[in-house]
Length: 211
View 1 (spheres, helix red, strand yellow):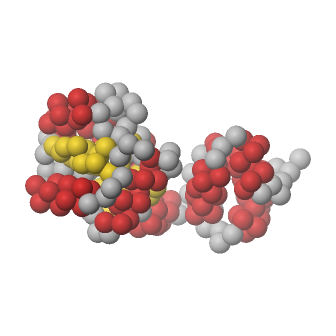
View 2 (cartoon, rainbow, N blue to C red):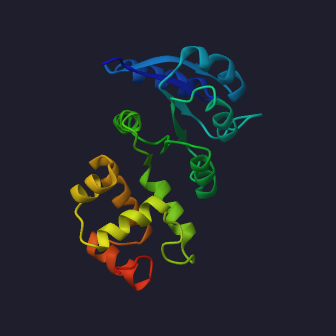
């Protein structure tokens, strides 16, 4: 397997150098370059064809979300992971809406970052627990389940009909890790501790029908 090619965008030299040293220590990851701004990244990243772009949110002139929106058409196969110290639910939603494949805080360990990079390459979106909690807190007051995606509602209906994760994987033609990822998100959004509780909440809130 070829190593995962990673490009870093951050306006702090110390962070760029630290990430480069950390990534070079991983046998399955290759650091291919970095940029100090979104504008610089637009020039440097496309020719390097990275598999993963690690990017800060808060940068001068062009923030991370703006840079990501401009880079995505130039790097259609790349995964974009936000690495930031900003714990802001609104900015997290903005980044996710722009197509971020993951959201991690800069206080994460090196192993957590490496795991997120590998997970993103498998096609799974990963959010730091702190971000998930902040987004859930900001959602309180909204109607139960209003933030469920169409796919999550589809899975929730199958869960209510008693299908296991393996059954759902087969029925929808999606990988087991993807099913588990959606189920975890469903439990979080419904503030449920397990599948049974999630189904009860869904039925009570009329999010699904067993007819």
